[in-house]
Length: 332
Image (cartoon, rainbow, N blue to C red; front, side):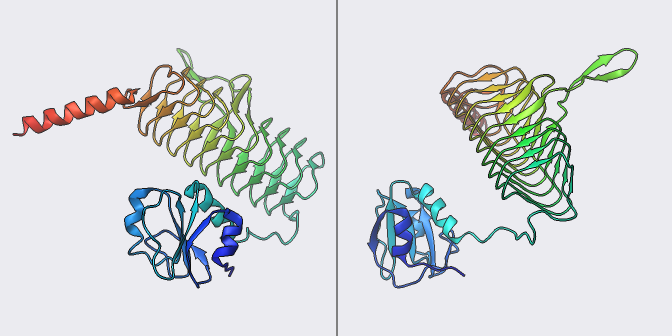
C-alpha cells in the first residue's frame, strides 16, 4: 500500500501547507468516512463544518478556507481543491487489471488488422477486417470492433464495448463497459403494406480525441454521413446520442440524458441528468440544460434553461416560486 508524507503530496500539488501532521497518508477518502491517516478535501465552504468531526489528518482546501486545521492536522491550500484532489487520487490509484500477455491467444483478430506498438488485447475480443489500432491502446476482454474501424493511440476500451463497422475513435479516449458505438439510428416510416419500414442507417460515428463514453451509453451511427463527438466530450452512463447529432468540443452529458436525431451542440454545452433534447435542435456554445429538462426549440449560446418544456432558468424559478405560493395559500 502506498503512503506519502504531506510534503510529498504537496510536491505534486504545489500548494501552501497550513499546520502540521506527523501521520503518513495512506489513502484518500471523503470527509465523513476518513480515518486519521487519510487525506480528504473541502471544495466548498458549506462543507467546512464537517472538518470538526472528520478524522482526516489532511484536507486539500481552497485558498479562502475560513477555519484552522487543528492539532496534528493540516491543510494544503490550492487555487482549486476539486482539481487538486484529482491529482491526489492519481497518487493512490490502484494498478489497472493485469495482462499476462499483450495479445491473448483467444482473441480473434483478422489478418488485415494493423496493430500499433504497445497495444494490448484481452481474451475473447473480436477485431474485424481492415481495423487499425493505434499504439499503446488497451482493449480489455470481450470487446468487439467490426470492419474498417480506426482506434487512435493511448485509448482504453473496457469489456463488453461494441464498435460497429466503419466507426472511428480518436486518441486518448476511454470507452467504459458495454457502451455501443455505431448502432443503427432509430429510423422507421409507416407503410400501408408493410407496417413500419426500417430506414437504412448507412453512416458512421466519429469520436474526437480525449472523448469518454460511460457504461451502457449508446452513440448511434448516422443515417447518412456521421454522428460526431468533438474533442474532449464527456458522456456519462446510460446516455443516448441519436443519429447524425453533432457535438462540439468539451460537451458534458450527465446520466440518463438523451439527444434525438440531428441535434447540434456547440462547444462546452452542459446537459444535466435525465434531460431530453428534441430532434433537429441547436444548442449554442456554453449553454446549460438543467437536469430533467425537455428542450423543444433552439437555445442561445450561454443561456441556462430549466423545466419541461425548458425555459430561461430565471423565469422557471419565478414560476416555481409562484406555484409554491399558490399551493401554500390554497391550503390555508
